[in-house]
Image (cartoon, rainbow, N blue to C red; front, side, top):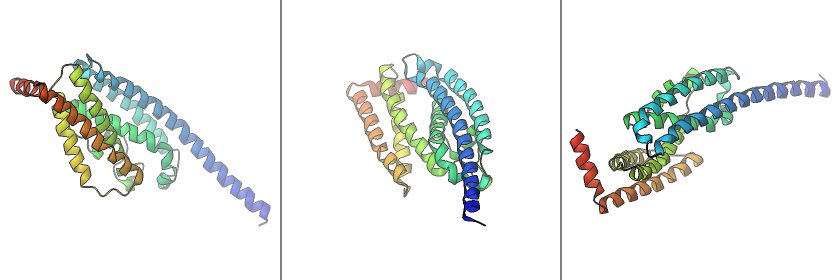
Length: 229
C-alpha cells in the first residue's frame, strides 16, 4: 500500500468520525432545548404563587421528560455501543443538567433524593455500564450537586413567599446530602470542585434558618407543621 493510499484510508476514518460527532451534536442541541424548557417550567416554583402550583409544574415537567426519552433513544444509535466514553464529552453537560432537573422534580414531589436508578428510568437510559448508554455515577453526582444550589435558592424564596417551614426541611435535607458526600473519596477534579461549593449552599441555608430563628418564625413554622399533622 502506498503512502497516498494509507492517508486516503485515514481520511475515510476521520470523515466517518466527524459525521458521527455532527450527528451527536444535532441531537444534543435538541436535548439542550428540551432541558431549557423543563427548567423554565420548574423555575416558576421560585415565584410567590409558585408554591401552590408545584404539582402542576412537576406534572408538566414530567411530560417534557417524555420528549427527553425520545431524544436520548435517538442519541443511542448515533455511535457504536462500545464507544460511549469516546463521545461522552458531547452529552456530558446536558446529561448532568437533566439529572438535576429530574432530581428537582422528585424533590418537589416527595422531598427525597432521587436514586441513580430512578433517574435512569425517568430518562429512559441504563444504570449499568454493561447494558449500553448509561448514566455515569459522576454525572449523577454532578446533577445532585446542582440540586443543592437550586434548593438553597428555594429556601430564600420560600421565606419571601411566607413559607417558613420549607427552609427548615431543605436545611435537614441538604445537611444529610452533605453527610453523604463526605463518605465519598472523590478523585474527579471537576466533581471535587463542585462538591466544594456544597459547603456554601449549606452555609446559605443555615443563614436562612438562623434568620427565621431570631425572628421567632422557626417556632411558628414548627408549630404550623405540627398542626397540619
